Image 1 (cartoon, rainbow, N blue to C red):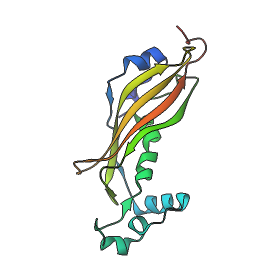
Image 2: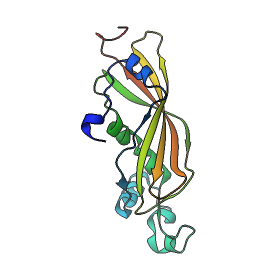
Image 3: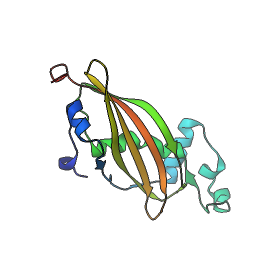
Image 4: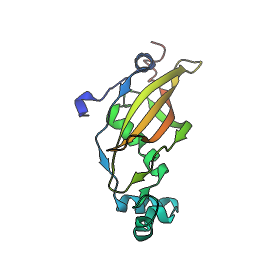
Length: 164
């Protein structure tokens, strides 16, 4: 998506109007072995299927695969390709209800994300809302999704717009 097609909601009402809307896809992003190794270094997850290219070549996938949690961690940056949240006082990643990794992501594969806003639940004071977004990570040339995650965010309007 280009900067001009990024959605820019500024109120909870505008977010509510987007329930059921599919956003995306994002641009394709290529998974490199360097990315995998860097993620392994940050998380301490050095399982051979991710970092040992020789052993992984003889393994079940014929190559190294990216960590599922690495793909999931791309969600916030991918969401910023689809929707800008700068119109809110703040937005926070609140967590995930459900995460699945239906297909491995081989090194060299390109991934992109589509997202559907599935629920917007205002807080009792009406100044903030909990937003549920289902994120679908798809690998180029792969029929199954790489990851499907139900992401939860909290958004707070600027005081002048709250309750408007």
